[in-house]
Length: 343
Ligand code: UDP
Ligand code: MG
Image (cartoon, rainbow, N blue to C red; front, side, top):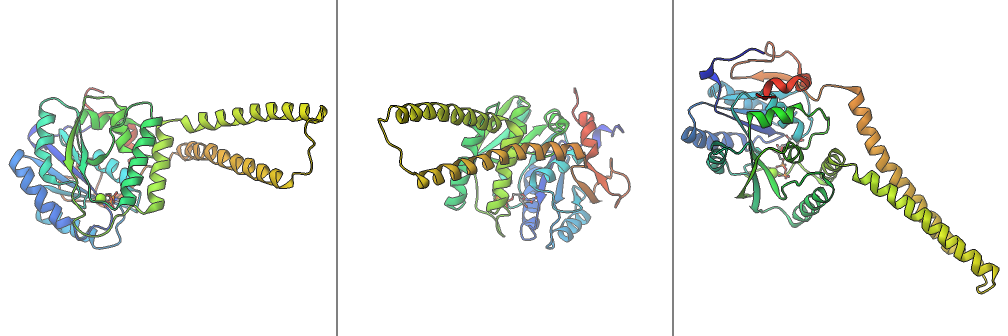
């Protein structure tokens, strides 16, 4: 690994995933710059463009041209928020890495509190939404999401987290070392088990534009989160299978007894048969589906494709990724120990 001179290593890197956020970028750059200048002498802001179709790339390029503290990591297509964040973490150089969304729902003005906790020794500082202005459907989904994750995950995952967080370089390196393809930053941050502090932050409404998480994208995130953190669904369906099998044996024995002793005379029961057959047919398919989910993950992992591809790096020092425009992949994630000092 090429070592950089001490003075060029930023104290903080700010990683921002961007997907069609043209109306927010200049404002978030303005607000983050004010905050950063008030707390550290050397920082970098990494906008990770996740395959935007609007003017976001253009804006990232011009911000990087105007401000030497801005770097753009332009991915070759849309890989999803959590992969985009991973790409930003891998490219970042700061001693601490702040992550926040581009839509300004996480107020950058909260960063100094996070920095204070970081300086006091916390390796991971996570924001918990104390108030939020999302539609009720999103809030209900979010409640179900965090309840389910906490029920099944092997480690307690802070509920109601928003994306705003600060990770030490060591924590960042540990997360980059995790080789799974479906990334779920909220759970990964909990899994590493480093000292974690929660800070309540009031979530603002979106600065502009619309949420990039429609219903299906949210469901996909839920599937990802659940299957990355637990094999509980597999154990659950296996238990349900055993329960049904045992129950049907007992019911069969009871019915045989009733029939043979002629206590009850069974007439034809097509309706009940139909309901039973279709219910258990559906249950079977659902259970196979859960197994399929895990199998799909194994298949994807076995293909071993890069997690993301970088089309272009703009601004800053192109320290680790070859010449500008060289497609770069996430393969260095596998050797990401180099990012986490002490690992
Ligand atoms: N985002 C991304 N890739 C995606 C979807 C979203 O990089 O495929 C970014 C988006 O630009 C924003 C952040 O992830 O910075 C969170 O998205 P959004 O605010 O739409 O989610 P919500 O707050 O509604 O859950
Ligand atoms: Mg948002």
